[in-house]
Image: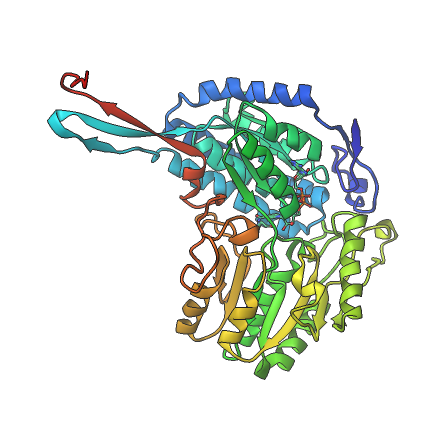
Length: 498
Ligand SMILES: NC(=O)c1ccc[n+]([C@@H]2O[C@H](COP(=O)([O-])OP(=O)(O)OC[C@H]3O[C@@H](n4cnc5c(N)ncnc54)[C@H](O)[C@@H]3O)[C@@H](O)[C@H]2O)c1
Ligand SMILES: O=CCc1c[nH]cn1
């Protein structure tokens, strides 16, 4: 089967390919079926045999070389990513930066993977070995194609695993560049394999008996299917899912920073960001001032050709998604929200861009907690502003969601900031900033965004979610890509019970 992709790549970067976010097909690929998936897993198994024998330091050296190549080729990869996804070139470069930084980080940790030595009676002893899992599968969403492939593969490879990666069919291109780079850096052929396809290919990967683990980034409904498939094979999963995160702005904040923070929380990558703080709770005293400034700055966002240096917002991923996002705005109006700016299709002056999937970033006022736009993940450039009076009230409302990916708070009162984040049911919290993603810090959600509360959430266990469905980045991810072997060594004779 051949799938056609709306925003895609024809292999050249000539003048014409700059104008391709307009439903022009510029790449086709065949979806991998059972045969191709088996082949990719077989190749990965062969590479794993070689890779697992290398010391951490040796693996780290290859990852470092891959990081160096990515860094050297940042502009080129960012350009392809911008064509692949539609995000602005400025943002695409930042994604490539956090990608090579991730490889560098895990290259550094690879040599430090170690077990313990435990003394036992009579001179006997035990030790533990931290071992790789085997062939891991990575399945990506379309919003951060290169970054997701890097964030999944770097810790997997650092721990001695191989990976078969399936990008989203909407953004199939840049994962291939990463595969080429790993090979060029000295990884055994097949260590990082890319298969193309949609849900059916993803299912084949998850069900494959030789796959040891699945790391998935995408929506909650697909995450549920992946968990079901993995459960049948008793495979560990990492799930990085959707969100509807709160951003809480207290009256004592630095207003200028809070306004900038709200834009960062809502409009990066056309609003197609899992951890976006789309429920913006503003304390009543500053509601009007904050709203006025947010609207002013939102209206200044330059929309257009994402490859131009001045552009800050490109087209959405595809026509159905654009229509879905516009539908949320329409529904919000019907439910009583006020469109303060944007929320309509945008047609750039350049005739070559006229069929692009552009829309004006939208700020909604008069929002209530029961509105669909406030409850559901929109995954587009739509900010909902809600007002609040007290800290206790806003905490209750902020946590009143099945999601738990991220949350933010702007205040000058640092005691309040820490008190509030301790109560927020979210895996990633920001104080006086939003949507910064240093690779040294673990990234992942609570609740339906990727982890599970311990039983029923009560005042006592609130925030005590385990990172049972994994994390990306940070030291903790090593544990999700490795397993512990205990070795018990007898130094005396066997004391038999028989
Ligand atoms: N938490 C995070 O880190 C994070 C990051 C980016 C995106 N997301 C979430 O991703 C969603 C948007 O991305 P999307 O539309 O690509 O998500 P999606 O769930 O539709 O698809 C994600 C990936 O899963 C594959 N897939 C679909 N059905 C499958 C199946 N049955 N088995 C295996 N694989 C299958 C798709 O082909 C794609 O590669 C949003 O909800 C967003 O919040 C989360
Ligand atoms: O979409 C979510 C993943 C992410 C967040 N920031 C950078 N990448």
